Length: 236
Image 1: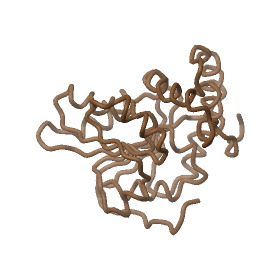
Image 2: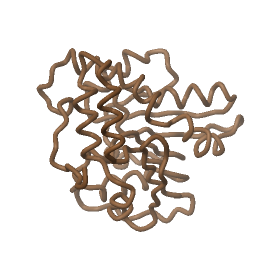
Image 3: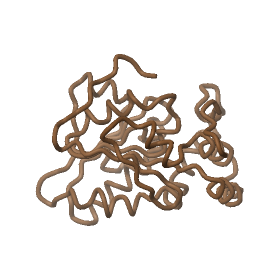
Image 4: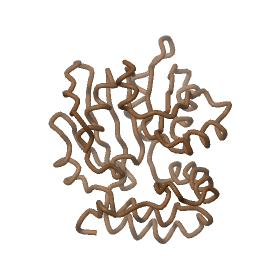
């Protein structure tokens, strides 16, 4: 756990992974994210204060997977009487197919797309978020530049913070999640994830890292001043 296992591969990311296990993985994400991702606290402290009951605030969720985080954010805002328009994207057609079927009645727009495609189309959003995306990337520069240019208020990337304790606790508590890729890929994700110091060193100037419970890093950027980084020519 001392060094980041950047070359480790998660089974669900493979094109030929078992479709039944993949679907159960997306379904179980809803429970896992509720328990360990910490989005309720993030919503209360960093998203809700930016919302109003009068004019809609637009939010983009990049790499939405099964769509449960996107739906939670939309529902929490609605219950608070606040207007939040949520768009959720993922480049994997399997994820979007699941999300659309699972959350057909949710007030969230799901789309198969990448952040680069949305930029090419000229889209902008007040808030840009992601959940458990950073550790999947080979490099951060292009992804962070794209998310910054898509936002005109703030960017919040929530990811796992690597530690022996996180690994041990997830290993002990994930046995109940049978029939999916959650346990094996979750342990791989922890090994691939950044410590707070590593993430701060890897991020470009202007980004800040905040530790968040349980075992999470928030990579944050205020884009309200309109000072966006230039887009790199290609992804890492």
